[in-house]
Image 1: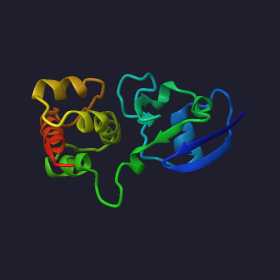
Image 2 (image 1 turned 180 degrees about the horizontal axis):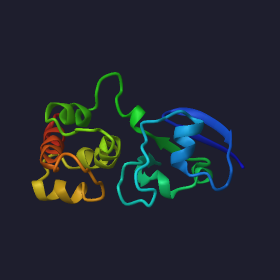
Image 3 (image 1 turned 30 degrees about the vertical axis):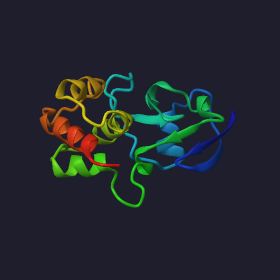
Length: 152
């Protein structure tokens, strides 16, 4: 099937098999390897990207479903300089192996944008859909609170 979409601000047209997952299309066809595939069941959150500005699990969506839509991956999160959330993750040491980090960033970016003074409980609820096997989440919570409080 032929699709046309905006990916990270650029127009993309491609022929894709109807059963191609969005995560596979992004990684294999477009070379956007920042989107990681963990569980392939929508549970871990590592494959989170934005479709029409909403976080979605790209392993649960077919590439044909982005036809006429806008997709943003972690590669587009920084705009010349690190996004406040990326910088806060770095400063708080909120990552270890880094496999889950892109998914956390893409899941939490809308939360940080919309919650300038979140509580720890709100942050923990917001990140509940993403799994990390390394950090224990404390530094991630710190990073999200710091990024949310950063002036825009």
